[in-house]
Amino acid sequence: MAKDIEEGETSQPITTATSSSSNTTGTNPKIKAKPDPVLATCRCFSFVTVMASVLCIIVNVLSAIRSFKNVSDIFDGIFRCYAVIIAVIVIVGETEWTFIIKFWKVLEYWAGRGMLQIFVAVMTRAYPDIYGERHEMLLLRDIASYMLLACGFIYVLSGVLCLGFLKRARQNKEVSSQQAIKDLQDLERRRAELEALLIVDTP
Image (cartoon, rainbow, N blue to C red):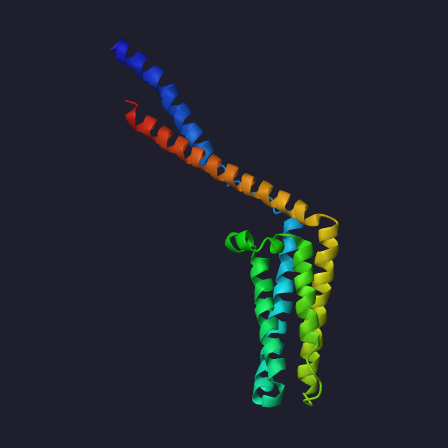
């Protein structure tokens, strides 16, 4: 009888300790990495660049359609098709897809992206006025070309100041932080599972 009482007294602290530790584990809030203001700014700027490129594509496609309808100006239509292709490359470069960056090393450097964007903006601005286009179309052309031109100049200036290397360093740090948080959450989940097994196995 006395032996049973002693065993009950010794097993009680283990159960209490494990249950309290499991409670603290369950009540711990999820760990989240703080957003990097530099990366957030770069993502917003990349979105603006993509929107400007899309507007340039729209303008050049409309110009190409009108040029091909007018058979005497077919070379301008071919010129617009090249502008559309290069604008698509600009958009793909902004996604920073590893497969594309691997084969287009120039897109990895901000100065290279900026030069490409300036080239597309100049091609878009060369949209001829001789067709008597409506004011809305000319306004869209100016907005698209000057927006992409400004983005290109900012990219070139940032590339000269080596801000692209800063962004890549921040991205690597963010990836490492996210991986560390994921590993920590896995450990916490595994710990909770082991504590649950310990409580079940305790007589």
